[in-house]
Length: 424
Image (cartoon, rainbow, N blue to C red; front, side, top):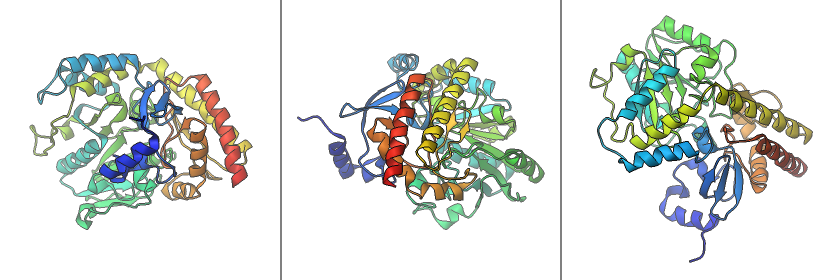
């Protein structure tokens, strides 16, 4: 049999998987071309099935903060797998991971593990409604909180990349109690609001940091109305700082959602918060939530191995790499005459092809719809650098990216930017 190619695998996949992918943005619809199929990965790099190597800034959308296939994570998963892959019963590592999350995050008193960030966000909304007895959820345009019905309205990330404002199959009743507000503006919070759900740093519309006073204003508005404030830290959790966004930004919510980093590259999410709120969950309280694979022993082993590596020195190094990449990338884009913004929030980077800073979803969408990201993505991928295949995603430098990787990326980005500028 001949070796598979990216094209042949994509053709086969489209016959048995809708769109040929198991998550829409992977189909490359918004950037064009055929997706590369990853055969293996190590550190800062992935290799496709044709043997081509890419400097990878997707890093599983932030899950691989140490880089791919970190030896200690691989060994932790290998040991755990040898003891059994799932039990449907409690394990010690679930307790250890929950203790570690609560130790790191001030105000986080109890957590419940799930299998994904979508589950975590959906469950956080349910427990907030149960704890307050109120129906309404406030979210912000361009913030993505997974694909549960009530939270899909005006979502960023893959929803926006598909040119959608929501989703077919979501009934009007499912979103009747969802209010969408502009990001970076504090809305009115009424006495019907159970929870205000927000990405403390919006990383699903190309990276938009919070404006000064925005998060503080949400905290005050929730306190006045008796509503709960929930930080969706599926992306920012344990990436912005050892204690996540609340440590770095100085605002403490009532509830949190986590994912990605805490699973070490395996499917794992968590939601948590104040003890009095979390004790509303069954078996203690009336709010039901469950999952057969929640707290999976392989995922908790991987998550604990990753968190053990994330000390102060690791965060200093991670932010340093992001700063270097941001500086070099902004310079080469400017030299090529491409109007671009490269925002940074700690070790997170964004890329907007816009002449002015982006502060909300409308501005992020205008930058995405210019088409420049699509052209730059293709030119950079052809040179062996992989960004996320959509203009609404962030860039994720990892601890495995060296200065040489950053400098090589800048050199290749300079050539790609010149190509885009000349053709434009």
